[in-house]
Length: 321
Image (tube, rainbow, N blue to C red):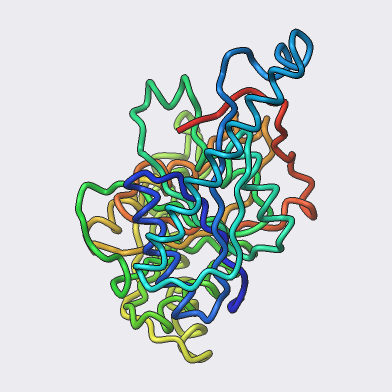
Protein backbone atom coordinates (compact mmCIF):
# COMPACT_ATOMS: atom_id res chain seq x y z
CA UNK A 1 0.00 0.00 0.00
CA UNK A 2 2.84 2.38 0.84
CA UNK A 3 4.72 4.44 -0.26
CA UNK A 4 2.09 6.83 -1.56
CA UNK A 5 1.12 10.48 -1.49
CA UNK A 6 -0.26 11.61 1.86
CA UNK A 7 -2.53 14.66 1.78
CA UNK A 8 -2.75 16.55 5.08
CA UNK A 9 -5.71 18.92 5.34
CA UNK A 10 -4.94 21.56 7.97
CA UNK A 11 -6.88 24.52 9.33
CA UNK A 12 -4.59 25.77 12.12
CA UNK A 13 -6.59 24.17 14.95
CA UNK A 14 -5.11 22.10 17.77
CA UNK A 15 -6.62 19.00 16.20
CA UNK A 16 -5.04 19.74 12.83
CA UNK A 17 -1.66 20.18 14.55
CA UNK A 18 -2.04 16.68 15.99
CA UNK A 19 -3.03 15.46 12.53
CA UNK A 20 0.08 17.17 11.15
CA UNK A 21 2.32 15.31 13.61
CA UNK A 22 0.75 12.01 12.57
CA UNK A 23 1.14 12.87 8.89
CA UNK A 24 4.79 13.84 9.37
CA UNK A 25 5.49 10.61 11.27
CA UNK A 26 3.78 8.43 8.67
CA UNK A 27 5.32 10.16 5.66
CA UNK A 28 8.80 9.76 7.15
CA UNK A 29 8.42 6.16 8.33
CA UNK A 30 6.55 4.98 5.22
CA UNK A 31 8.71 6.85 2.72
CA UNK A 32 5.65 8.65 1.36
CA UNK A 33 5.35 12.14 -0.11
CA UNK A 34 3.69 14.68 2.17
CA UNK A 35 1.30 17.17 0.57
CA UNK A 36 -0.46 19.92 2.53
CA UNK A 37 -3.80 21.62 1.87
CA UNK A 38 -5.50 24.59 3.53
CA UNK A 39 -9.05 25.52 2.51
CA UNK A 40 -10.17 29.11 3.03
CA UNK A 41 -13.73 30.38 3.04
CA UNK A 42 -15.46 33.15 1.18
CA UNK A 43 -16.76 35.79 3.65
CA UNK A 44 -20.39 34.82 4.08
CA UNK A 45 -22.27 38.03 3.20
CA UNK A 46 -24.59 36.03 0.96
CA UNK A 47 -24.74 32.35 0.25
CA UNK A 48 -22.80 31.42 -2.89
CA UNK A 49 -25.85 31.01 -5.19
CA UNK A 50 -27.36 34.33 -4.05
CA UNK A 51 -24.06 36.18 -4.37
CA UNK A 52 -23.47 35.07 -7.96
CA UNK A 53 -26.91 36.37 -8.92
CA UNK A 54 -27.26 39.51 -6.80
CA UNK A 55 -23.73 40.86 -7.16
CA UNK A 56 -21.29 38.57 -8.99
CA UNK A 57 -18.48 41.15 -9.02
CA UNK A 58 -18.72 41.62 -5.25
CA UNK A 59 -18.71 37.85 -4.78
CA UNK A 60 -15.54 37.51 -6.84
CA UNK A 61 -13.87 40.16 -4.67
CA UNK A 62 -14.86 38.16 -1.60
CA UNK A 63 -13.33 35.05 -3.17
CA UNK A 64 -10.11 36.93 -3.81
CA UNK A 65 -9.99 37.99 -0.16
CA UNK A 66 -10.61 34.40 0.91
CA UNK A 67 -7.93 33.12 -1.47
CA UNK A 68 -5.35 35.59 -0.16
CA UNK A 69 -6.15 34.67 3.43
CA UNK A 70 -5.86 30.96 2.56
CA UNK A 71 -2.40 31.45 1.04
CA UNK A 72 -1.20 33.33 4.11
CA UNK A 73 -2.52 30.70 6.51
CA UNK A 74 -1.04 27.90 4.39
CA UNK A 75 2.38 29.54 4.61
CA UNK A 76 2.09 29.59 8.41
CA UNK A 77 1.07 25.93 8.51
CA UNK A 78 4.00 24.94 6.30
CA UNK A 79 6.40 26.61 8.74
CA UNK A 80 4.92 24.59 11.62
CA UNK A 81 5.23 21.35 9.67
CA UNK A 82 8.84 22.04 8.75
CA UNK A 83 9.62 22.64 12.44
CA UNK A 84 8.11 19.20 13.14
CA UNK A 85 10.65 17.73 10.73
CA UNK A 86 8.24 17.30 7.85
CA UNK A 87 9.36 17.53 4.24
CA UNK A 88 6.54 18.91 2.10
CA UNK A 89 6.44 17.75 -1.53
CA UNK A 90 3.44 19.87 -2.53
CA UNK A 91 1.21 22.53 -1.00
CA UNK A 92 -2.21 23.83 -2.02
CA UNK A 93 -4.48 26.68 -0.98
CA UNK A 94 -8.13 26.42 -1.98
CA UNK A 95 -11.32 28.37 -1.35
CA UNK A 96 -14.73 26.83 -0.86
CA UNK A 97 -16.43 24.10 1.08
CA UNK A 98 -13.77 22.26 3.04
CA UNK A 99 -14.89 18.66 2.57
CA UNK A 100 -15.50 19.10 -1.15
CA UNK A 101 -12.12 20.72 -1.75
CA UNK A 102 -10.25 18.09 0.30
CA UNK A 103 -11.82 15.27 -1.69
CA UNK A 104 -11.21 17.07 -4.99
CA UNK A 105 -7.54 17.83 -4.29
CA UNK A 106 -6.92 14.29 -3.04
CA UNK A 107 -8.32 12.91 -6.29
CA UNK A 108 -6.44 15.45 -8.41
CA UNK A 109 -3.01 14.63 -6.98
CA UNK A 110 -3.69 10.90 -6.62
CA UNK A 111 -3.35 10.84 -2.83
CA UNK A 112 -3.30 7.35 -1.33
CA UNK A 113 -4.10 8.64 2.15
CA UNK A 114 -5.91 11.72 3.45
CA UNK A 115 -5.18 12.94 7.00
CA UNK A 116 -7.64 15.28 8.71
CA UNK A 117 -8.22 16.57 12.23
CA UNK A 118 -11.59 16.46 13.96
CA UNK A 119 -12.77 18.79 16.70
CA UNK A 120 -15.02 16.16 18.24
CA UNK A 121 -18.21 18.23 18.37
CA UNK A 122 -20.95 17.23 20.77
CA UNK A 123 -23.91 15.28 19.34
CA UNK A 124 -26.31 18.27 19.11
CA UNK A 125 -23.88 20.57 17.35
CA UNK A 126 -22.67 17.74 15.12
CA UNK A 127 -26.27 17.00 14.10
CA UNK A 128 -26.84 20.64 13.17
CA UNK A 129 -23.56 21.38 11.41
CA UNK A 130 -22.32 18.04 10.17
CA UNK A 131 -18.61 17.26 10.18
CA UNK A 132 -15.87 17.90 7.66
CA UNK A 133 -13.96 14.80 8.77
CA UNK A 134 -17.00 12.50 8.53
CA UNK A 135 -17.89 13.86 5.11
CA UNK A 136 -14.33 13.27 3.87
CA UNK A 137 -14.40 9.70 5.24
CA UNK A 138 -17.69 9.11 3.43
CA UNK A 139 -16.74 10.61 0.08
CA UNK A 140 -12.97 10.23 -0.35
CA UNK A 141 -11.81 7.72 -2.95
CA UNK A 142 -9.31 6.08 -0.61
CA UNK A 143 -8.20 5.68 3.01
CA UNK A 144 -8.76 8.54 5.45
CA UNK A 145 -7.01 9.01 8.79
CA UNK A 146 -9.02 11.07 11.30
CA UNK A 147 -7.08 12.52 14.23
CA UNK A 148 -9.26 13.99 16.95
CA UNK A 149 -8.84 15.49 20.38
CA UNK A 150 -8.66 12.52 22.72
CA UNK A 151 -8.18 14.70 25.79
CA UNK A 152 -4.56 13.61 26.31
CA UNK A 153 -1.50 15.21 24.75
CA UNK A 154 0.73 12.37 23.53
CA UNK A 155 2.49 10.89 20.55
CA UNK A 156 0.29 8.15 19.14
CA UNK A 157 3.00 6.27 17.25
CA UNK A 158 4.94 4.19 18.04
CA UNK A 159 2.24 2.64 20.20
CA UNK A 160 -0.42 -0.03 19.86
CA UNK A 161 -2.20 -0.45 16.52
CA UNK A 162 -5.64 -2.06 16.79
CA UNK A 163 -6.86 -3.71 13.59
CA UNK A 164 -10.60 -4.43 13.48
CA UNK A 165 -11.46 -7.42 11.26
CA UNK A 166 -14.73 -8.60 9.76
CA UNK A 167 -13.72 -10.81 6.84
CA UNK A 168 -14.60 -8.26 4.14
CA UNK A 169 -12.32 -7.21 1.27
CA UNK A 170 -12.14 -3.75 2.86
CA UNK A 171 -10.89 -5.35 6.09
CA UNK A 172 -8.26 -7.20 4.05
CA UNK A 173 -7.04 -3.86 2.66
CA UNK A 174 -7.09 -2.44 6.19
CA UNK A 175 -4.95 -5.39 7.33
CA UNK A 176 -2.26 -4.57 4.79
CA UNK A 177 -2.22 -0.94 5.91
CA UNK A 178 -2.10 -1.84 9.61
CA UNK A 179 0.74 -4.32 9.11
CA UNK A 180 2.83 -1.79 7.18
CA UNK A 181 2.21 1.01 9.68
CA UNK A 182 2.93 -1.18 12.71
CA UNK A 183 6.16 -2.47 11.17
CA UNK A 184 7.35 0.94 9.99
CA UNK A 185 6.67 2.68 13.31
CA UNK A 186 7.73 -0.15 15.63
CA UNK A 187 4.21 -0.46 17.06
CA UNK A 188 2.44 -3.45 18.60
CA UNK A 189 -0.22 -4.96 16.34
CA UNK A 190 -3.43 -6.18 17.94
CA UNK A 191 -6.28 -7.87 16.07
CA UNK A 192 -9.94 -7.72 17.04
CA UNK A 193 -12.98 -9.56 15.76
CA UNK A 194 -16.33 -8.64 17.27
CA UNK A 195 -19.07 -11.23 17.22
CA UNK A 196 -22.30 -9.28 16.93
CA UNK A 197 -24.95 -9.96 19.57
CA UNK A 198 -27.48 -10.30 16.73
CA UNK A 199 -27.28 -13.99 15.80
CA UNK A 200 -30.35 -13.95 13.57
CA UNK A 201 -32.74 -15.73 15.94
CA UNK A 202 -36.01 -13.81 16.38
CA UNK A 203 -36.81 -13.43 20.11
CA UNK A 204 -40.32 -14.73 19.55
CA UNK A 205 -39.14 -17.89 17.80
CA UNK A 206 -40.37 -20.95 19.66
CA UNK A 207 -36.91 -22.54 19.55
CA UNK A 208 -34.95 -19.36 20.27
CA UNK A 209 -34.44 -19.93 23.99
CA UNK A 210 -33.55 -23.62 23.52
CA UNK A 211 -31.14 -23.12 20.62
CA UNK A 212 -29.62 -19.79 21.63
CA UNK A 213 -26.81 -21.18 23.78
CA UNK A 214 -25.97 -23.83 21.19
CA UNK A 215 -25.86 -21.27 18.37
CA UNK A 216 -23.88 -18.87 20.56
CA UNK A 217 -21.23 -21.47 21.37
CA UNK A 218 -20.90 -22.44 17.72
CA UNK A 219 -20.58 -18.81 16.70
CA UNK A 220 -17.95 -18.11 19.35
CA UNK A 221 -15.96 -21.16 18.33
CA UNK A 222 -16.08 -20.13 14.68
CA UNK A 223 -15.13 -16.55 15.53
CA UNK A 224 -12.17 -17.70 17.62
CA UNK A 225 -10.94 -19.87 14.76
CA UNK A 226 -11.36 -16.98 12.33
CA UNK A 227 -9.35 -14.43 14.31
CA UNK A 228 -6.63 -17.00 15.06
CA UNK A 229 -6.38 -17.86 11.35
CA UNK A 230 -6.08 -14.17 10.53
CA UNK A 231 -3.26 -13.79 13.03
CA UNK A 232 -1.46 -16.84 11.64
CA UNK A 233 -1.89 -15.58 8.08
CA UNK A 234 -0.47 -12.15 8.90
CA UNK A 235 2.46 -13.66 10.80
CA UNK A 236 3.18 -15.95 7.84
CA UNK A 237 3.52 -12.79 5.74
CA UNK A 238 6.05 -11.37 8.19
CA UNK A 239 3.80 -9.36 10.55
CA UNK A 240 4.30 -9.50 14.30
CA UNK A 241 0.92 -9.88 16.01
CA UNK A 242 1.01 -9.12 19.73
CA UNK A 243 -2.47 -10.49 20.47
CA UNK A 244 -5.69 -11.57 18.76
CA UNK A 245 -8.82 -10.48 20.62
CA UNK A 246 -12.41 -11.73 20.39
CA UNK A 247 -15.31 -9.66 21.71
CA UNK A 248 -19.07 -10.12 21.81
CA UNK A 249 -21.55 -7.24 21.51
CA UNK A 250 -22.07 -4.12 19.43
CA UNK A 251 -19.22 -3.88 16.96
CA UNK A 252 -18.52 -0.14 17.25
CA UNK A 253 -18.75 -0.13 21.04
CA UNK A 254 -16.39 -3.10 21.43
CA UNK A 255 -13.80 -1.58 19.08
CA UNK A 256 -13.76 1.68 21.04
CA UNK A 257 -13.77 -0.16 24.38
CA UNK A 258 -10.75 -2.31 23.55
CA UNK A 259 -8.87 0.65 22.07
CA UNK A 260 -9.25 2.45 25.40
CA UNK A 261 -8.19 -0.61 27.40
CA UNK A 262 -5.09 -0.99 25.24
CA UNK A 263 -4.47 2.78 25.16
CA UNK A 264 -4.15 2.28 21.42
CA UNK A 265 -2.40 4.89 19.32
CA UNK A 266 -4.30 3.98 16.15
CA UNK A 267 -7.40 2.05 15.11
CA UNK A 268 -7.41 0.64 11.58
CA UNK A 269 -10.63 -0.63 10.03
CA UNK A 270 -12.33 -1.15 6.70
CA UNK A 271 -15.52 0.51 5.53
CA UNK A 272 -17.89 -0.91 2.96
CA UNK A 273 -18.84 2.58 1.79
CA UNK A 274 -22.63 2.25 2.06
CA UNK A 275 -24.68 4.59 -0.10
CA UNK A 276 -26.65 7.46 1.42
CA UNK A 277 -29.97 5.62 1.94
CA UNK A 278 -28.43 2.42 3.32
CA UNK A 279 -26.14 4.45 5.58
CA UNK A 280 -29.12 6.36 6.97
CA UNK A 281 -31.05 3.14 7.59
CA UNK A 282 -28.24 0.94 8.89
CA UNK A 283 -25.79 3.42 10.30
CA UNK A 284 -22.06 2.90 9.91
CA UNK A 285 -19.63 1.19 12.26
CA UNK A 286 -16.73 3.27 10.93
CA UNK A 287 -18.69 6.53 11.40
CA UNK A 288 -19.43 5.61 15.00
CA UNK A 289 -15.85 4.58 15.79
CA UNK A 290 -14.46 7.79 14.27
CA UNK A 291 -16.92 9.77 16.38
CA UNK A 292 -16.26 8.05 19.70
CA UNK A 293 -12.67 6.78 19.65
CA UNK A 294 -10.10 8.61 21.80
CA UNK A 295 -7.29 7.97 19.32
CA UNK A 296 -6.77 8.40 15.57
CA UNK A 297 -8.81 6.15 13.28
CA UNK A 298 -7.73 5.03 9.83
CA UNK A 299 -10.71 4.09 7.66
CA UNK A 300 -9.83 2.04 4.58
CA UNK A 301 -12.57 1.80 1.99
CA UNK A 302 -12.97 0.77 -1.63
CA UNK A 303 -12.45 3.39 -4.31
CA UNK A 304 -15.72 5.35 -4.53
CA UNK A 305 -15.34 5.56 -8.31
CA UNK A 306 -15.47 1.77 -8.53
CA UNK A 307 -18.15 1.31 -5.88
CA UNK A 308 -20.53 3.86 -7.37
CA UNK A 309 -20.71 5.97 -4.21
CA UNK A 310 -21.90 9.53 -4.43
CA UNK A 311 -19.29 12.31 -4.56
CA UNK A 312 -19.72 15.45 -2.48
CA UNK A 313 -20.19 18.65 -4.46
CA UNK A 314 -19.81 22.35 -3.77
CA UNK A 315 -23.54 22.88 -4.23
CA UNK A 316 -24.60 20.47 -1.48
CA UNK A 317 -25.65 21.63 1.97
CA UNK A 318 -22.89 23.11 4.11
CA UNK A 319 -20.86 20.83 6.34
CA UNK A 320 -18.47 22.23 8.92
CA UNK A 321 -16.68 21.08 12.05
